[in-house]
Length: 471
Image (cartoon, rainbow, N blue to C red; front, top):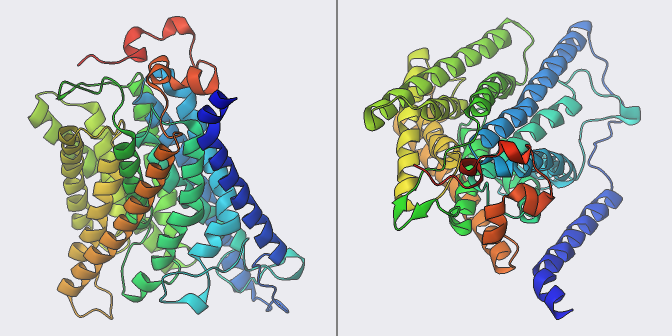
């Protein structure tokens, strides 16, 4: 009995916390959803109904594209890690989406979009559920789009922020701790900082610009992943006697396909953030956003390839893949407001930054198996600041200098929030003894130690895949 208490004491504490959180959700539900019940929906003109229908359908398709990015993240992460951790990685990507949807419905959506009463503030809560429905589930067709489509689109973004962390902590984190982290990030941390900009909070009042989430989504996920990687420590064999030891992924085909899926999904992420698509002006804006997104991604891939080629004497496909993602992250904040030449520049710089970021983590002995922080954290910062350098200046700001300053301090506030809240959470999980698997479990692989099964027949898992310590 004493052994069981010592072995599972920390996990019992975590279960008590989970039960408390569940009771909180139930209490919120008893209070009643925040679905604002309209006394009577206003009559819509045929033009308004057509716009409402078109916007809702396009937003739904964009939400599906962003959700499909989960498949891209899963394939990229699986391909860049050892075969013995494949099931664990796939399971994490399924569950951070599933847990995230529920937590965002009960708490996150109300925190992120609390309503006009909290405009310019740091915090607010509009209640659980999805607002905007009238009696009988009908909606006001004079609005721009359905609140259901809006929720689906926004929850896909929340899931993206959560799943970024999975790659940074791959191969050594206990599954139950990942579930706890995912619930807290999607239910609390991401929605609160998201409210500061997209929910009309204080950063929005200061005219901070982040169109589709270089900072609000990607930097939050990147810095949360960095906190996790620091507290967890490197994988066994990653740094030996002070030297970096390469641990190549087991399936670069998966990694490449994952990046291409993410690239396609980004056309839901960025153009979808236009939110309304009806009419010539909105259609042109949506297509322009897709073009700047494409140019930056292509420039990022080329830049990273060239920089890696110069530094390592060989063209490295993993650098080019991360470069494409870096370009996509960098343009996400400003895809609606920069000229085409600036989109190319943003991508070129992002490709350079991702190589520098990967090398810097290596020098600091921080193990990030897929480059989550260089891609999403570092290039998320670049996207926020680049908006000030190249983007159309908001009317209420005095000039370029003030715009750059707003972008710098707003980006810093969100990154600090994500990093230190997650650092504290990971430290608590570590103190409870439930953060990292044992050395023996890590060596065997998380598929067996955490889930009791293999993704591949044992005969197909080579020694390099089980313990990749060759350079």
